[in-house]
Image (cartoon, rainbow, N blue to C red; front, side, top):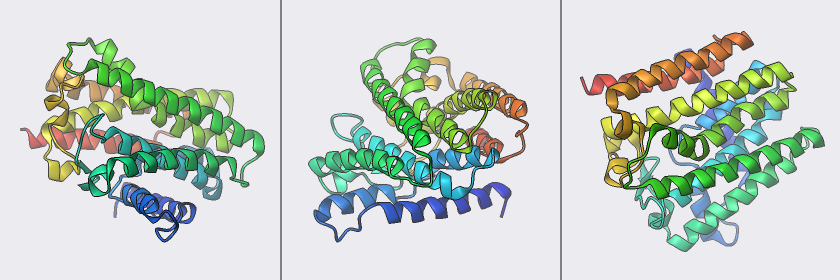
Length: 299
């Protein structure tokens, strides 16, 4: 097992156990709601965002027990956003994480409520985390609320851009919110919990912005180069919906070049932290390898 595989296996095990403790069991009334929540949470998700919380916190010396609550909260927010994104009024998708979306498995109303509940649970989880000082909890809640707000604004801009010709700068604005905001929070959250210095937090923030961009370009590229089976969601959906994407705007080859450039910039930020060989670097490398896999599948 590679170092990256060991890291993800450990983080996923801990995050899933934390989520299992924090989310009511399916026998809890109303049972349909909690069944939908657990169906959505415990699909074959990568746990990428919680992994960023754990990685950045570990890099700066925070123990896992102080990181897990916030990492689980991030996954709750992310899953809520996926449930709502998949709704017929949004992206109208039937497949997520390799199985039926919440509104297809249950119904639209239950899916909406499952997302609403997960969002509330996320803030409750951080606010009630007595392993953290109250001041840290307040900071995390405020930053997560701002990130979630930017994520929603990005989704609105994404919807408004469908079927339109948009410039690269507009795509970047969309995805700094829709995708990048929660990724940036995840990186910063681990640093905040670890008590990172001003300089460390600045480097983490710059890295978070770069890896958020790296994630989105890679995701856009995979949508046009991979199969539905490999993605676990409907392939080619972005193009079919007229989404504003990097490959659609600058082409596949330039998107691949941009991935390499942004990856290098992200690693430069880790060098400033003297963490270019740690867990955060593994996560950046994972995205680079995913894009390279897409490249070889098209050659």
